[in-house]
Length: 258
Image (cartoon, rainbow, N blue to C red):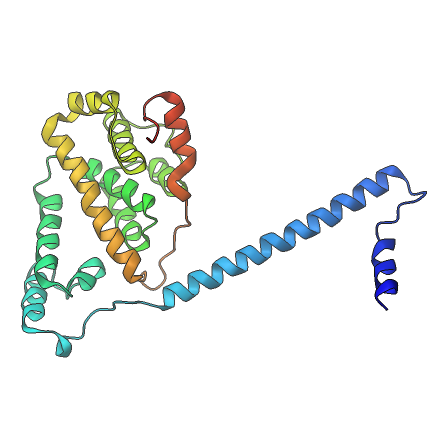
């Protein structure tokens, strides 16, 4: 039985006396068929894993009747400002009320007392959210960035993991600064000099600490698997934004990793 099955399979590839073009075409079709099946299997696996991850909200909002006194106090202070109970990263961080208070106060600084304008701040936030593929963070700030005046083409490029083709000078400097810091964990002299000339020391501190702040929120939510709001579209993974990193290294704007 094994021999007959092998003979049957082998006859699929018995091209003795066949036209060379037909033989080549059939081989290509078999290879394409195998490739298509592999791609389909990978997509199904990715969708299954994504759905499973989304279904497992590891740290959902704490019901009021289960909060400690410290958690209730922190939640009430949050609600007094936002008119809602803690959501997103703050719902997760409420497990440590003092830490939630600190991170929320930092958010208020970013929103109200930032030395960068809102368009510049949203650019930093989007680059960070994209670097961490943080779904909640991206969906919260994509519309905010567009409203603040960031061009739709720039937002779309960052979303795709591409370097935007056209950016204003301040946008390009912030983009390179934040990408270099998050990709290489350091900043080259050339990048630092451009940022210093444009934003001064205070602006550099603001931009880099803001990237760190939103990276903190991203790590917390990625660990907790904080879900998107119903109907929100997820962004795909872009491993380390490699295309952009290679382009920046080639241009000399971003130093290579040590």
